[in-house]
Amino acid sequence: MDEIGLALAAQQGDLNAFNHLVLEYQEMAFNLAYRMLGDPDVAADATQNAFISAYNALAGYRGGSFKSWVMRIVSNTCLDEIRRQKRRPTTSLEPYDPDSEEEIESPAWIKDGNPSPEEVLESSELEAAIQKCLQSMPQDFRLVVVMVDIQGMDYQEASDSSGLPLGTVKSRLARARRKLRDCLQFFRELLPDIFRLDGEGTP
Amino acid sequence: MNKNFSPKDWQLLSNYLDGQLSNREVLILGARLNQEQPLKDALLELQQTRYLLQHARKVPVPRSFTLTPDMASQMRSSRKPLFPFFSFASVMATIFLVVVLLFEFLPGMLSSAFPQKDASNEVFSMEAAPMAAEALDSAEAPQIIEWGHPQSKLQEGIGMGGGGADTGLLSAPPVGGGIDNEPEMPAEEPGPIADENRSMMKQAEVEPITGSGPILGIRPAEETAAFNDSVLAILSESGEESIRTVSNPFPWLRVSQIILAMIAIGTAITAFILRKGHLRGSSSLRRN
Image 1 (cartoon, chains in turn red, blue):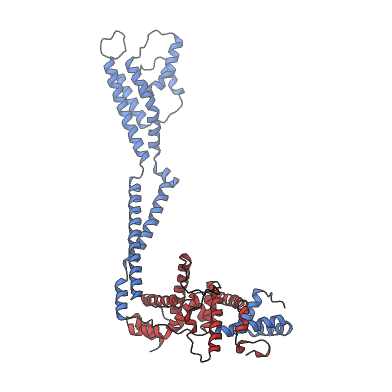
Image 2 (tube, each protein chain N blue to C red; image 1 turned 60 degrees about the vertical axis):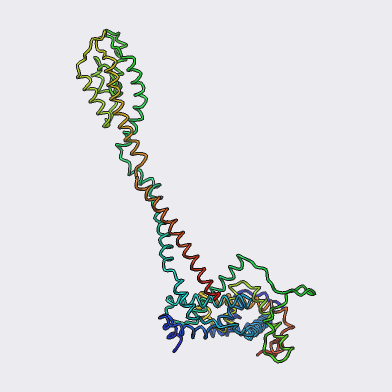
């Protein structure tokens, strides 16, 4: 059964059909939430909330791309969570390194399947750099750049999933990339050689 | 190296990376890239940034987000179809309340609601109030008409004649030229109360003066007091009636305002409670 068929079956109360759709999109939904919120636990809660909201709102699904529909719910849930966090700021319980007095990154970063420790280190640092740069951006820019550059959506999909006009998606994406370019300049030395595109290294 | 490009240039480069430019725009940008090295560098850095983001690690899903039949059944039971009803009712009641309040304070509506007759009654009753007090005083000291009064006094009495009739007091009928002077009086539109008073005056005139007082034409004190009391009673009744009309032109308006306010507040509180209960149910669902 295709996506729309599953969605229509779910509308009729078929929970299995809905769960098929959840399994299809849960990775994308969780990654979007994680990139938006920056915390895996909060992202998992937001993803679960988004799927519960989607199940409750199935009657409002009017056909079309189920992926865009559900990702819009996920992005709205993330934006709600960010607003809630701003209203009620919480203190992080992450352990602090007494020497550097800097926050140690979540151990989740180190869970990587790469065989080489050097590559693991480089990868986790790079990931940390990307995530820090994303978190330093305004949420509206962050959403668009995560959808297009990290989730691999095209402009129209990003527009449908975020509820923004196509022109706004383009302008926000350009500004977000420019900000990330500036932010990642500080981490250029951490980038593996394959990512160094200066000169003739352009892929 | 100058990287202070305009936002339009940055958007052009970003769109170029994603292949969103038209052929003409690509040609123009290509020509600029060949001529401007900083622009080319900026494009390379944007390309590098996008490449980094595209190869960012996909974070594995920590758990499955599928819904169990228990969760689905809980969600069905926690759905509150009454919440939209109550919230809608609250909004509608508030809108109606605002409309009713506007209706009350709309000056045009109010002025059209007052008939001109009531206004004249109100003015008359207000004017009559001090006169009634005077009437009481005059009841204690009955007015004496002196026959053969000098002309000057008579003229004064004649001048007072028209006004005296309006006061409703027991007074002597206009004497002599009083009748002749009547057409010279300013024209007045007699109100219903004034008509009543005049008819009462006529009645008083028609009544034969009885009694054996020492002075001819003077009523006995009891009779005068009774007559004045009856006139005051009529005046006070008509005055109360007009005041009642002025102070409460729309008795249903106040009642409807109170009812609408109660409905708005009641439904809003109910909707709020339902919403809270729904959120509590949803959060417990997520914990499960």
